[in-house]
Structures are given as C-alpha cells and as structure tokens.
Image (cartoon, rainbow, N blue to C red; front, side):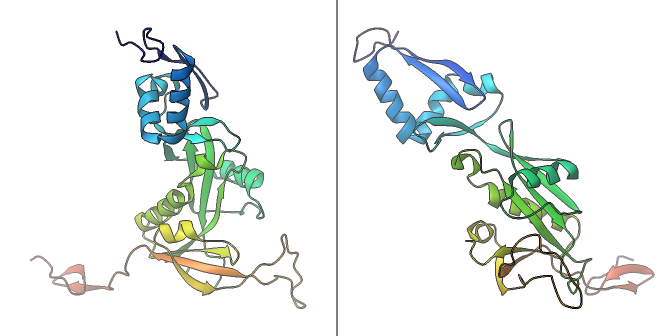
Length: 255
C-alpha cells in the first residue's frame, strides 16, 4: 500500500468514467493530489499518457492513446493514434461535401483513403487524374481533395495532413505512377506538403473557367494557386529484346 504524502491515507488515483471516447473523469484521495494530477495532465504529456495507460483507458476504449490534448476551451480530451483505412468513394464525397471549406466533392477518383482518430473519421484524401489536360494522364496523378474536419479540437488533427499526403505518394508509387501533384491557394501555408517531401513548382492557374467562347459557371471565386509535386518513382528505361528475352536497357539477361 502506498500512502499519500498529502493526506497520509492510501493513495488513490482512479479513472472513474470515459464517455464518447474523448472525455474522462478521474478521482483521487485528496484535493491536493487532484491538483497535482490535473497539472501533470496539462503540462507533462508523457506522464499523462503513461498514467492513463496504467489506469486501463486503452482497454476500456479499444484504441491506442497518442496523448492527452487540450480541447481549446479549457478542458482535456483523449487523442488517439491516427490510423489510415479504406473507405468508399461515396463516403469520401460525402465527407468533403460536409467538411471542406471552399471546394465541392470531385466527380471521380483513382483511389483514396480515410484517416481516423479513434472512432472518428477526421480526414480524407482523394487522388484522381490531373485536371490539366497537358499533363500525362498515365504517369501522373493529382491529389484533387484533401479535407480534415474542423468541428473537432485542432489537436486531434495534428500530423493528419502530412499522413494523408504521404499515403497518397506511397500509393501512387505502388500503382506505378511516376509523379504526384496537387494545388493549393497562394494564401495557404503548405507546411504539411513540405513536411511530406513535396516541392512547390510555383504559380499555376487559378483563373476563372468562364470564357467568352466557352461560358462556364465558377462554383467558387477564382484564387491564384500554387502547384506542388513529388516524384514517386523514376521512369523505367524502355524494354528491348536481348537473347530471346525482354529486358531493360543496361541490364544483362540470364542465358
């Protein structure tokens, strides 16, 4: 038995309740210890995570705890490790329609992924064909939408954009594409793209689609844009016939 140094009773730190996989309530043997625990939860992330793990919060909720995060209104929330997972194109479209700040859902995709924090879907990435017709449609893909929820505490989205951009590049490489691109507005920071290894190629488009010869309806105000890219894989040398077998130039065929 461990005695509390403040009340000299048996030390008690218990996890009383967890609801909605985010909010939690704890109990201690005395108010002084309660204040110490509260301070540790707010100011010592590693100690807070270790304490809640020892108290069994992961077994209760069925998720792996990343940290205890600030909910921006003076409280604390459980921040679970982010995980990527499959979702349908329809679900991705519905998510973008509900949560994207200024863009509508795209009409098609090649592939995409969802991002979960515990039980909550907090983000999606949609990868499709390049919108610019001059770009090679067979060698290049484009992140046409990347969207994260804004109705949850900011801390729960931490590192989410970088994970989705990184997954998009890895998946494009696995599918044989050589390059992946995306566009941001010039007033957007682009920090997540730089953190994921993308390179800014400079201004690219952003003008109105409405022309005198081809009238169009702009679904959002035109904004100057920047194009970003990342190389997925180097181009393969052309195959040629060597010794009755197809091989790549610069290699030696087995005989």
